[in-house]
Image (cartoon, rainbow, N blue to C red; front, side):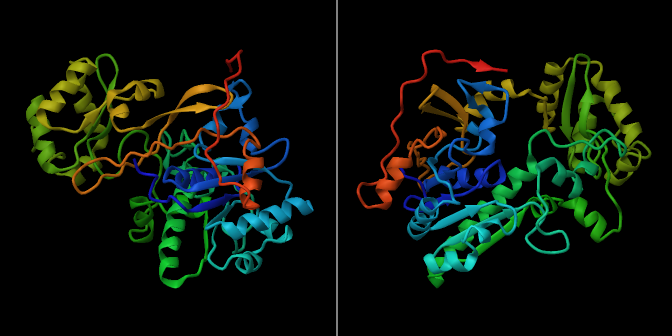
Length: 405
């Protein structure tokens, strides 16, 4: 059993909501010891976000806080500041997503953090950046999706902007933040010094504009929402069948010819013989494809597409995803024992590690999301060198467990 590639790394987590907690959860998934500092009495904002709640525990909070320990600290009090100083001295990483300037006002600006621990890597996540004409703006996911252009690219048509169905700006900022922390830890091995890593919801979304970005910066064209069809490849998208829909990705001319052979179409039909022509005549291509697909139910059609070697799939709901054998085979469900809820299943870490011989390096030390302040005494004892930071114990679940919606 592996203790994880970040075993021995200590992270002080001052974050709340989603971008920061997602970053620190990623570090915890890799074996780091993550100590989540929470406001006494209320904790992370997401502890109150719901429904659903199960025995008072927010499923939103559960989604972003596995593999962490919780300590309650009032950072405006002398005890809170003293304890945070002790945590900083013992940590490798500190992560915060306060509004710009808040940490400085608490007495923990970057210069003070470096004085306390010159090897400390600090990750700071903001909404729109720490400087610039709009630096310091509060950042919430949906606002960032709109401001960063993502909503203009998502929806059924240009006049129908839609947000992505998960808080993708928050999640991407967390992912980029964790990526930056790992890079800084590697550089510290060479320099011996920590550094400050900054990212934002704005930066994270712009960072994944991909071809939509260069479409403007190079070609001078503004992308817009086009529903469930790819703006640069055709046919590529969602197509109706006799009893539902399938998605196909005909991403090369070779695939186009195989697709046409399977469904009795002429690959050299005028206006459709090349991908640029098909994109220009997308409506006609969609109509032609759906005429053929209407002859088949979804299950039969997926079989025909598989035989032809054309990438295809159906649209699953979340329940179907977690019941899918392929999802389970990839280790994407994690069984833990929660102190209040008992055994629960969480979405699991998206990474797997193998040795050169192909043996998987399993990490079985995963912790459930903590109840508020569950580890306050243990963390204080560890900071005082009175005891090692032991794995939290699982408490028996509440006898009247249940979820409210």
